[in-house]
Image (cartoon, rainbow, N blue to C red; front, side, top):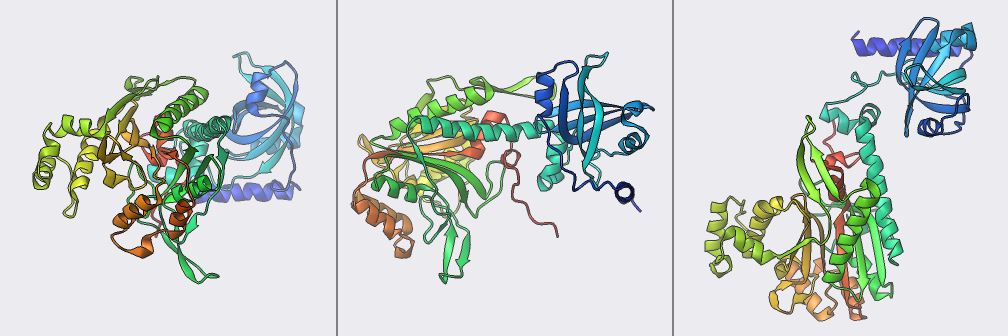
Length: 483
């Protein structure tokens, strides 16, 4: 029998011992009076408390025992004496295991070392852990286990739990900000007959009752714009999108997006909204507009300053700076050749605008660490945006780049139904079945001029919380099933 199986056997024997004493740990009812953190922050000598949590450490001092219990808020020390609990209860207490849940009632006091502690009067076993906690209770390091068994990661690594608590706060503050500005939150279909709003490979599913295939949505956009048509002037949704594409440090097939639309706005309106919202979230959640990541020695590796105003620069300016001032005067074959020389990865079937896009994505975007609004992108990249009056080869679009990746695209929305149909037909390559006719009919009923914004919540959390992989801000990232 290996060590793990032996430990499990010991724990099962302890469970049987508890049940033999008439103690059924999975049926006890206990109501804590407060959290561990609240008890510490509202310390009064000899104040009665009732706390519940998981045992994270156990120190045997003979006729006295010390344990630490942890709940979501933090930890607190518990002190048990034989003379207080009595022989039978003390014997049970001594045989509790790391990972067990208990409810503890007692009074607060401070030890000689200054540790706020609960002097235990009585306790109940709330759950018996039949498997031991991770070997390194104070740090689970193996990445594969951390992602597959996130509960172990959260048990072992307090800093991981802190990331996900802050992620929740980030989403809450986004909602607060938008609600304060008069936006209405809605929910739109995740299963769609035609996947629209972006160019991406969808996941396909089948609806048995309707007898037809549906697609998991790749964007929120087209249904939210229908609401603009219906008279909802400020609208947003935070929800999951699904794209059947690659896995990487920056990509997960299932990801969380915010999309917001404001009637009578444009890309400039969305620029102000983006800057103000991200600054609001950083200030409320982090207490600062400066984000620093440090190495193991505590040295600053990266410093991002969100203090407004953020830099604005056109897409073409950045391309010329990187690829040469004559880039847009070259022939398409010349651009392809130079892009390859510069180190961009160019696919055999790339169109000319995609070659330029590869230069931006691979060679320019990773260098944009400080907040930067990259404006006026090529019209081919964004068929749902309005053309720029000063340069009709571009559209009124920006990409907000921070920490070397796109955080948010936004644009002046196309509301001309004739122009929109032509551009979507071009994108669909003449395949009429790919056109969302219901959306185009909605546009023909009249959509007000508007600005629209999309923010990748996972990438925003990566940036704000100093995480290098998208998997570190998603509780349960996609992984290949174990065989």
